[in-house]
Image 1 (cartoon, rainbow, N blue to C red):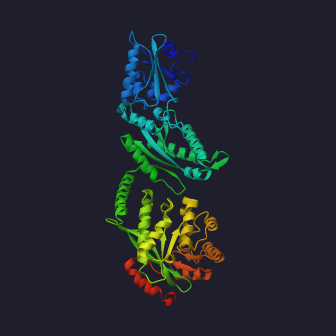
Image 2: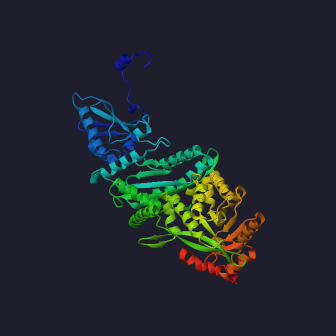
Amino acid sequence: MDGMTDAEADRAPRTPSPVAGTDDGLLSFDADLHVGLVNGRAVALFGLSRAARQARGLHEMLEASPRLDRDAVAGLLAACLAATLPDGEEVADLLLPGAPGLRFAIRRASGGSWTVAVSEDRRLSADAAGFDALTGLADRAMFEARLGAALDRPPRRRSGSAVLLCAIEGVRAVNQVLGHAIGEDLLRAAARRLQAAVRDADLVARLAGEEFAILQSEVDAPDRAAVLGARLAELLARPYLVAGEVISVVPRIGIAIAPADGATGGELLRRAAMALSETSSEGQGGVRRFKPEMDRRWQETRALEAALRAAAAENRFELHYQPQVVLPEGRLTGFEALIRWRHPERGLLSPAAFLPVAERLGLMRRIGTWVLHEACRAAAAWPAPLCVAVNIAPAQLEDGGLPEEVAEALRRSGLPPGRLELEVTEGVLLANADAALRQLLELRQSGVRIAMDDFGTGHSSLTQLRAFRFDRLKIDRSFVQDLPAGEDATAIVRAVAGLGRSLGISVTAEGVETAEQLARLRAEGCDAAQGYLFGRPMPGAMVPEATARLLAPAASA
């Protein structure tokens, strides 16, 4: 205190405990530990259900609180009982390990009664108090403690509980485009919506990043959790106005209910996460409750991940090669290298079956490096001037070392740079922006050709053409498959072919399967084609035969 020595301050009257403010929850009891009055704030802080609010005994009421584990109940009861003794003392500030984020004070009141005052002390550090510093919601530690306490209560006092995990898609894009400050404001706004949509006895927490969790109490029927999940999804999906920007996000929610879906907190969180992972991740969002078959699929995914890690460590993959031909004559110009994985139990797997998993596991850099070196080695044995096309993953551009990696692959194999074509998608460019363009420019200056794959499927393909002059545009197969009848597809193919001619860029159509499609592509002026009509992806041993067949001009007849 100002003007006091330390000794004088020690003798000075103490200021009231943090739990002595007007925001206290207050609960009165008598010498027999019978409950008297309980205010609304105490109901909220203790998380009491409707049934628990009617309890007459202090032990019974505290035992029903999902915020107190058994040790916390025992400790608080002992302090209350001690206060009722003839020489009992008041407790100014009581912290209990089994009641994270709560402080208690026990005081004598008039008429032979006592009060328990409870509050959340937010002046503590966020980690110590159990609160998330950004949103003010509970953090993971408090959520897990409250969930454990709710499940740890005796069966006669245990009401149904549900865990709802909520992921909000779109926040990372906001961070990248509008900045992290607006992204944080968006998370705060979402947190406020969640908090306003639940009851006092429920708990909302931010677990990490864009993931929130709700502990719903008094779930006497599964429909109650489903109704809450639908309400939260609808509420979170409404547009936000943040710093003058109108922002929309996509909420995804997974639900697990005790005891049907799990008897422990860990089981419920894990199974809610399984349900969350099966909601749509393609812009539609959704709400899912855990089902037993999700556990089976989850186990299969974990097994696939383990096998894929082992395969990546030992390069247990193989490349297949699909012919690429020049139009109109249909003469072979090279092959696209396409990775395959011969799984020990599931057989030969296509890229769609395992590359998304590899990307999630952070294995794409290693796999991409192997593909590049193996494709160059194989192509060096083909007759010149046949080329090989290799797909580049975003991970290969992250550290700026792709030009050196390509140079090393060419040096080891002896393949001339002009016979290597690297295919990148719009997503690769967007993920790495300026750094990717710098590397692609360096590669192109070295003689390596660069193609944009899946042209027309992204929202800024034309913007990428202004930033970098590609050697080739590959029309996505989704446009080719609707030829020749699809008027929209025909118009798109015609426009891309015309764009290529105007810019001096070769245009290749992917996914050509029929002679009718080929005829339309020729008529629209496509420069090259690739698809089952000319050959399916084949093992390297079959390349010589395909080469002999497709190098003959008559093959296009």
